[in-house]
Length: 124
Image (cartoon, rainbow, N blue to C red):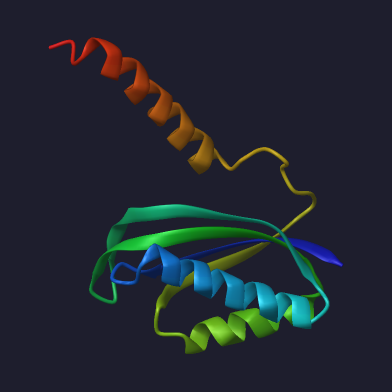
């Protein structure tokens, strides 16, 4: 089986719980077609570089998939039918990175920086 990284952007007016449900539906499609999802990350509500279907923001989600090509094709077909998904992209990779994605590690670094600032207050 091949390894894929899949990112999708959901509309800004859906809740994070609904994005999790979308991820679970996609996970089920992959599983039914003989594949597996190795890792799924929710990156949160982020600004878009430009408007997509009148949306300025979108919920980003990453999935690392180990599946045959037919399973990925079926998942992409189902995604085209869903109005909540604005864009998606699937890339074939040679191997998965076991570390958290750069987006998640950056968020952790920012959280630690805010914690340090909270003890002393703002320096201004």
